Length: 115
Image (cartoon, rainbow, N blue to C red; front, side, top):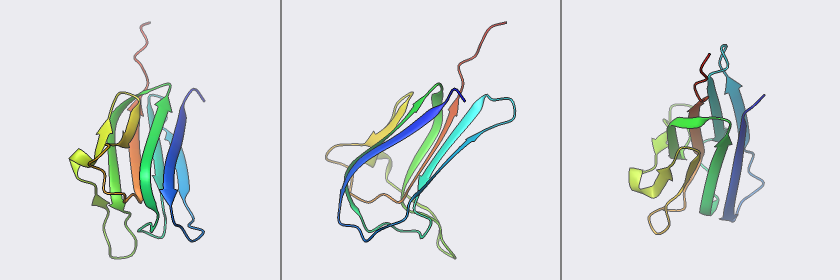
């Protein structure tokens, strides 16, 4: 539709890790969700930077995790100072980010249109 979600990153290491991205739009086309994660849980990549950007909507809520839930394990969120959220991006915070990322969730809302 009218929404896009782009994920760019720089990382070292890796052993053919499988990652997944899902995009969802609610029934009235007002809420847009973008999920980027490693289904196996924790990533062993050494991320030096990351940025997820949405177009066509403004971010209402976003969260970054060092570990994604798998089995009995829970999502482990990054500390708030490790990443920053603007109206359209979620990205690492230089000097604060600890190089671990396994999941990003973004919920964005379409701009309100007057009738």
